Length: 131
Image 1 (cartoon, helix red, strand yellow):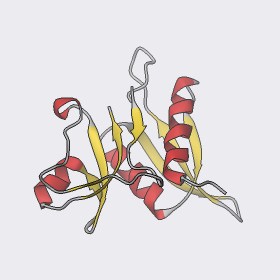
Image 2 (image 1 turned 90 degrees about the horizontal axis):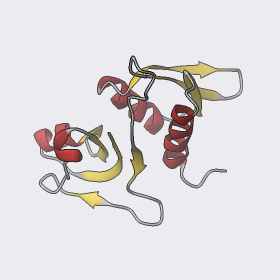
Image 3 (image 1 turned 90 degrees about the vertical axis):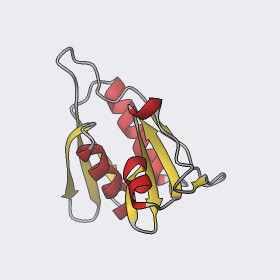
């Protein structure tokens, strides 16, 4: 059993990028699927799909690289952990690298980026930062 499934997902993606893999499989959940959707919408990954091998579902994440074979994601970091949750209000959502990166938050209106959470006027738990 994994105590922090989101950190496990981010670590699998980080390790796959360092090894220059084209894809990585992550055990599926609704929250991880939403995180993968945001990564795709923001252009950090090529695509993702749910893979069912009979008894386990997984999210297959297709990683994205530049023309020089450098990963598009240069840094991916977990902020809120099970031992130390980080909650922010709509006005307190930090900008990542002056707006060049992305925050991912869980809010009462669903999982969204920091930019869209500020626009909607909602706060929530700050899951991770990506740039």
